[in-house]
Length: 165
Image (cartoon, rainbow, N blue to C red; front, side, top):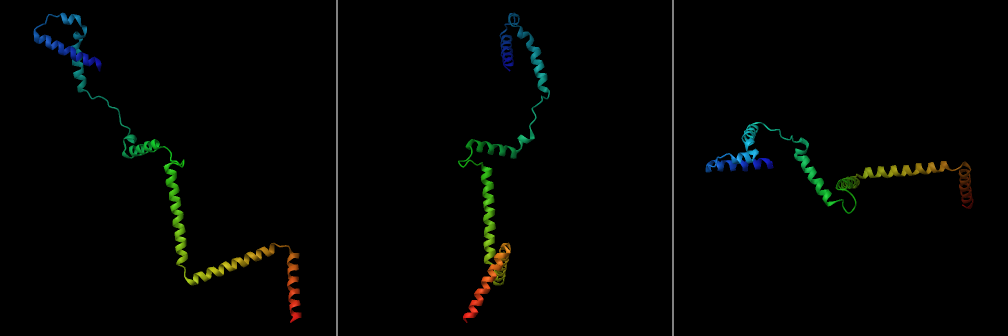
């Protein structure tokens, strides 16, 4: 680029010398660049008519969404990781999970409030039956001699109670 500026300056100097009438040829002998100048100017003019190749754009980088994402990433990197040590994405995901849990909890509470009395009684009966079944399961886990001993105690207390009456 610097050479073409020099060539333009030289061509301007030649034009001025032609206009002044100083065409004695001494300037051409002193500077060989001036002799090659007309051919170079002509080749530059011809090359300006040609289509010059341009660097192709990367469609991914040129897309608007990619530019916005890159901008956001630069901003978050500039701010750094939050004080909690979690990235913005982790905080957003935790917030969503928390909101979902709260929604489920609210729905359960609302379902409890809207139950009919019949439904409530059925639930109570079901809970009592579960409790009885658990107690039976615990009793079966005890050794047999403990169960026999317990029955004997009951019968002796019942017999003693009948004798008193």
